[in-house]
Length: 258
Image (tube, rainbow, N blue to C red):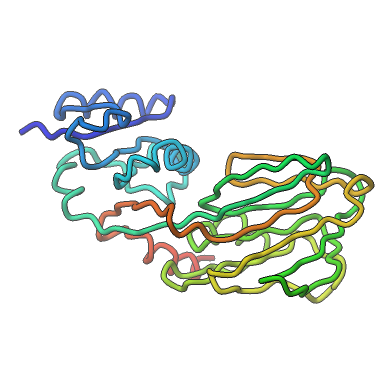
């Protein structure tokens, strides 16, 4: 029996082959067709393509079911095309809430973006960045001298945040990670866990002498003077996972891998 699904695929040979196979057994439609009758968006690709798809189609208010055609596939299900309709019907849902980034450049221009993984600040030149860190309008670090700093969601905590020495956060923990990148001063500061409702404000000291750029998933802004980050609860998206590969279990397993 043919099942109607919305589907997107990246340009890799494996994803394109999977798309052709799905079209043989299902009524595949574009996710931009609001009245197509599809109730889920199947994503064929890797984690990067899934993040790109979330940004592109989050306004459709449909759940996303990923099939891994890439490498790591942390946000994806295993590559298996048989019984797709049944697998989607029995899948477990996980809701991801993005971070909202407000960035003001040294020129005064203001830019906003969303990030499902993390918002990161990086020094642009040879000199270390000097950043004032405020949480909910309270200055917690007058001057953090570093290569950069990031704020990560629970889903993003296993990615760059973990590589930078930040903690892995269980999906339902209602916290976000604040993690420095190669901190020089204060020497012993290794970051913090914050309530997910916290508002994080980064103010760049000497932005012309020590330029800093900001990155929110796929949006990169150079020469920032101030960056404000908060969770965007109204923009949550739903990912579907096979019961044996649900996202919460993967995050727990990451804490015991070596």
